[in-house]
Length: 369
View (spheres, rainbow, N blue to C red):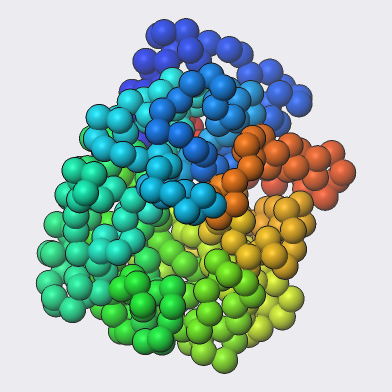
């Protein structure tokens, strides 16, 4: 059902002539492939042709956008979401500019972590912690289905949820404190996360497991800077990822900007080939889309900078580079990111074969291949 949504949109675009532009070989084909690897946030409750994200989509062919309810850089409650009618029009207008249907993503975990709120007229659902404490996996299914139904009706096709972090540190400021973990038992986390995913899938919404290889033990917040879990992380935090992936229910996996010397002595997970390609791809066997956490978070941007961060993430095996464009805001950031990837290809640091691997995974999920 999820792939049929994309096939329907794409068919309509072909019939209307919106997707009739031929993709030729050479640089233009490379542009398309690179563009699909970028997901970006933007400002605006509505679109006009002067909005920089329109150029990101039309000219740089970015493959996805992420929506927020608040503008962190401005400390404002005005960003992309105000209510149902407005949101439907926004997502429709976004898709109208795309030759290849966009991933339209949002963080809608339930509880505290939500972008579509009750105040805006959307149904609310319990937090992961509340669901886990209920002891009822069907409650997680109902929450996932409620969220899925809401997102689908709004033209959103991807939920960056559920968090499958194991609650190993009750003082964790970014997981436990925000009630984002189902449990301190990895088996319970996997059970409830699968039920939640089943609910999303019942409504045709893609899910995303986060934050690999597990953010639940951290004492710090990777939004704010370098976060080391070497001494607190435990291998059982991989269990939910292994179980859900082995059960073929994982659409996407999001990496964490956490450093773990036991997995890689040099780089945090998002930039670690040992962690992404070695552990997640080869050992666990995940062949779906790997998306980075926000590349503007200080755990990456503050340590490595823009170009180096992109280079390391793609080299490590990330398929989609996520730029929330919300912690700080930069017009045209999607175009800048795509141009940087292309520059790295021209410099010989990233191969076109590597780009094509990610492109094919993305297009497979979008139902185009």
